[in-house]
Image (tube, rainbow over all chains, first blue to last red; front, side, top):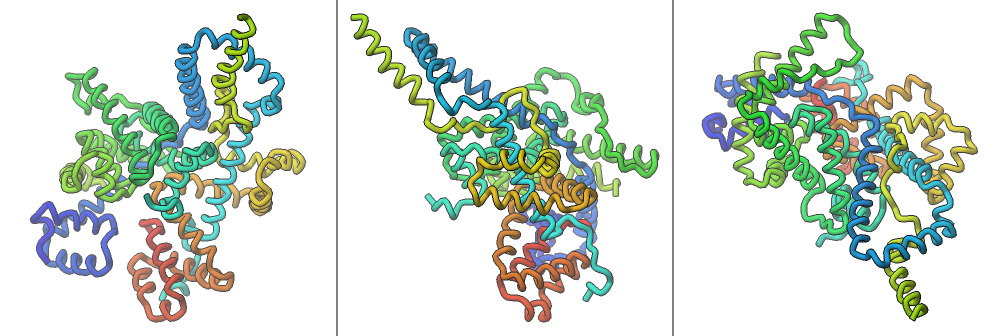
Length: 154
Length: 192
Length: 171
């Protein structure tokens, strides 16, 4: 094969190799090339080192109140938009508010505390998503350590 | 347009958000919140700013729901918004801090909290020093190279996707990545 | 004149006020400002430990099929020892850290796995376990081996290949 490091276009082959994204056949060809090419070999070793170093850079946990702050922001944005629309209808706005208050007091879907309902609905959805993923993780054991002794080997 | 069933799951969820299904937005948030914040943190290197930007991203996604069309992958759209906001932040921040080198700026950042599983203090310090070198090496990259590397390495996006996020050609992305990794190899290859 | 003004006002009120207020509560994502929302792990523990009556009230808004599924999942999760629950929550946190596309690939894989008949799932799961214990090169060799290919259908082989692709890179 042509030496990948000579042209930037095909140096992506070396990057893909280090990221373990190459097909087995292509990888085998590249590995045979690297046995004879010290430059490509050095590139691959250094790139793997970079990869492992970047792997060690983990992200910090997201703040626990991230979602709360986001939803508050969404709500503020909605109110701001609503205020902008209401300003266009000043003469009718006062009467609208009066009727809205009457409807609010009489309407069944406002009778329960909307805040606690919203919180519990989202909590249930969060738990549903978490349980789905947990069941998947238990079944597939993608993130578990291998627990099969030597007999597992071919 | 492809049938809904043929669309990727996130696009299907977003179409449900468009139809008023709030639980689908929650699900998208749950799935994408952490990787997005981590991407933004590594890009702007400030956790509080990263979370602030991430919130802005989700707010924009939510506000755009009425006109959403699945013309690209959901993650492409999400990270396009995120990268645009982050690069603007970095550019605006750099104008305010003109005259100071990036290294000077990042040297003042607080060290990250370490997890509690520490065998020895010496190992602690070595690990933290190592992380600091990694962080500084990435911080030294020009913003677009930095974004390209982070999307390539941590999000595992394909070149075509990165190109759509950065609004450039695939060959431009490959060039960005090649130059970025070259610089990172020079600074980090000795660490392992 | 006064009646005419009132009539017009009521008509305008109808368009401005009633139109955005639907018969169903307007779906809004998330709780109102100021309400503390726990992260997934804590919410899960809270629901698991909740008294049955309270949990029933919380879940009764869900459609019956969804409610039943969630109750069964909570039951299974709740029956695990605390250490196991903690381990799973740590795995969940690590999983949610992964790139979104990788997370979705894992969910897709699980869905395809569940579509297999029960007896085939057992065999595929055994193969998952075996592959996890191998080094990457050995996994690739195992996937290509006549032995494995003689034991599994094309669908199952694709599942196994995708499983190997999802395994953490560092062994």
